[in-house]
Image (cartoon, rainbow, N blue to C red; front, side, top):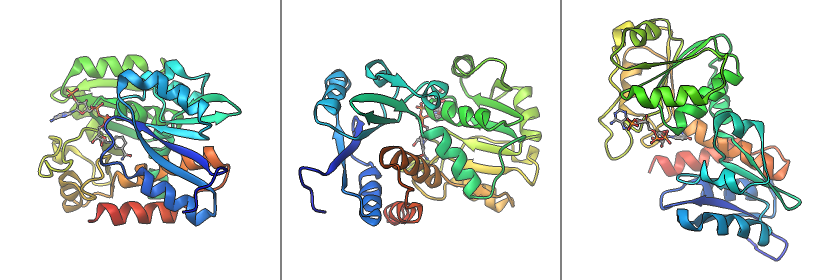
Length: 284
Ligand code: NAP
């Protein structure tokens, strides 16, 4: 990498940032595309977020990714919020357009792209989302934007579920249930796609998985897990054992990155390289 005064700077704002795979993924993508860009990890504590965003402008960064815990708070410091971020209620990608910072969200689109790339159709499908955090909201927004027939958000804490359903647009087919309700079992029995958006199964707790009455599922139901470390979670392994098609979380990670790359550079992202980098890091 030959960094000069004209190299375009992008990076990742988060706290802490010790395990991020984004710098390796993006720097490999820039190199493969012959683009003079560099991607930097920028660990910023919450109390310094506003100064950091001012710094993005002052230092002339072309763009920024935003991760936990800044995805919602950063919205207060931006000049404009794109529809993609408004629907999710969070920003994960900022574009510096001639000094104006515009907040986008590529998590929702990235997740839906990862399903489509895996051959899973979304329009007209019945969806059950397990978990009611930030990732659940992004995934739900993605399904709504892509005209799913119904989106049921279900978690152990009904209060959190209601909270997230209220934040999604009204007059859309989104419903909330607790994990122990009859509505949940009814939704599961007609589900086309079931997604784990909880951290259950994530390293180091790799044996855990969401409690699912598997016998209720249709054999054709697709099982998806946002957890990408490990690449095959206990939830996915159980689904494969039962004959379901599975889609892992590394596809979303690569696709949200590819969409951010395209927003910053205006060039098509080298998806194969980005996936290769992620897979090589995650399989170690
Ligand atoms: P979050 O905002 O903290 O939400 C987590 C959700 O999971 C909450 O509903 C939480 O319920 C539930 N949960 C946590 N521990 C649980 C347990 N032991 N049993 C049952 N439910 C539990 O987190 P997030 O940002 O949505 O992220 C969730 C997961 O998605 C993480 O593993 C993250 O790595 C992954 N993710 C992957 C990608 C990707 O690109 N593949 C992108 C974003 C996120 P309570 O509120 O009751 O605790």
